[in-house]
Length: 206
Image (cartoon, rainbow, N blue to C red; front, side, top):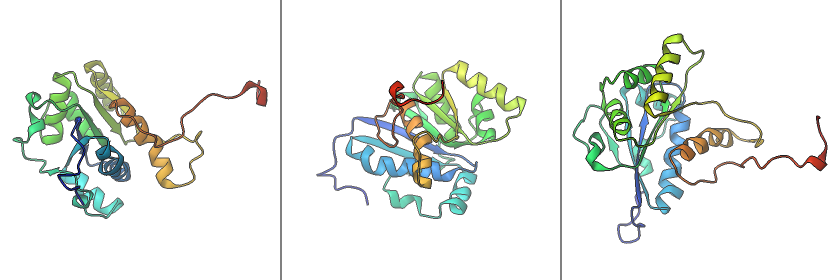
């Protein structure tokens, strides 16, 4: 449930989460839970928009009601929302998961839906835009589109979990990706154990 207005912390940052139609909705769910909990407590206001197929994948892979997280939700066809304009001054955006098709539309400036339009705004305003791409293998077209977005200032990362933190649960595995995406958005978090190096005195491979 949304916090009581009298007890909610002051808003310090505003971010956008786009959920597009690729497999990987659990990554978006984990990020939404972060913003509904620790993120909100830190004064971060998260706004969420699903694409049509992003919502369908969510139903298949997560199954909960997105509205239950207490975050503002927007229609993907509504271009009148605040973050559809650079003057609204949102701080960062993450598309998670980001489909190959969404990558292509953003890379070519085709604002076919609110996710694409918002991403275009973050690029033109030189604000952090993180695209968590969930696709494999990569076609040459996708690679070129990702290169274009990187040159334009976006951060493109794969939805590839890491294992050096020895995750024991699916949530911990998701956190290895979500934590890195939050890092690139400039948001402090402690979702995963950070690599601190290896003690040379412990021995191991030369």
